[in-house]
Structures are given as C-alpha cells and as structure tokens.
Length: 224
Image 1: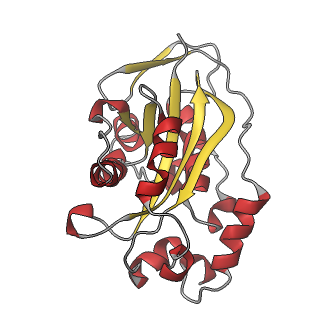
Image 2: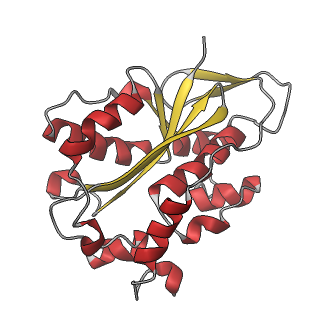
C-alpha cells in the first residue's frame, strides 16, 4: 500500500493560538512512497488581526498584505480535501504547527487532525544526532540540501526544503538499504527507494507574490 505524506510548514502571527495568535500561511507538498509528486497546497490566510512587527521580521508577511486574503473558514474545505483522511503530516517541530492548525479547525467547527497523524522531523533529528544543532538550517548544511532560495522565506518554500531534509533523515542517499527509522509519531517508516530528483516547483505567480511584499519591507531579516 502506498504511503502518502504531506510535508508542511506554517507561518503565524506569534507563538500561541490560545493567547490570540493566528495562522497566516500554510504550505504542503505531497510525497508518495518517499517521492515528491509535484502536487502542493498553498494558502495565505487573513488572521483578522494585526501581524506584530516582531513576526514580520521573521517571515515578512504584513497585515496590509493579508487584508485581501480569505479567512480560514473560507478555505478550510479545500485544505481538508487536500489533506485527506489518512495522510501523514510531516513538519519540523510539528507540535507548534499542529496546535495552530487544530485551533483553526476547531474555530471553523471542523474535526481536528489527530496527533498520531503528525510526524516531527525535529524529534527524528534529535534522535539521530543527539546534542547537535538540529534546526532546519543546520540540517540543510549537514545534508548538503540547498536552501539559498529561502531568502524568500515562506511556508511553501520551507516545506519543499523540509521534504529534502526528511528524505535524508530517513537515509535517502543510502540507496538499497532497508533502514527502519522512528517517525516521531510512534510508528516506523522503512526506506528502500533510491532518492529521485525533486519534481516540485514553485510557480512564477507564487514567487512574484513573495517578491511584491518583500520589496516593500524595510526591516525583514533577509533585507538586513
């Protein structure tokens, strides 16, 4: 049976949905049997509140940019259709993203996604490299994964980078080996397949959307 995994990332207004912070961007890329399919989901979300300057310095997404974007309740059905009923959701520090997604689902009066469906690449990395730096940037450097396009910081681009890192965490460059790896969600994933070239691409429209709002910012970290 094929295994469908969705490698994803979110951007938010802050750290805690229980204190008023909200989801503002989500990006997911589809992987089937450890091979990227080229399918993805990407959405900016109007949080119906201001985006603090401290958050803008991290991701560059401003209150003004989000004013004409849909609220989560207007896109939740499309999101849930893409996620499906049994796909595995893979994120770096997955608990953070899970709390925001499930808060938004609850607020939209939709069923939450069970914790057992989430895989945490940070937990995998800490188990594989105890005591080492295991941020996404550190893992990119360790595995030789290119993240130069991360200057246009965003959920979809970070999800693409994480997909490459995830393959490496599962032993992707050791073709032909049967490697059993704890997923961080209580189940084991076996990697036998030779790593294939990435098929995922970011559209010109998505890149231009990033460039448009990044160009208007004075204090974004990549403009420093």
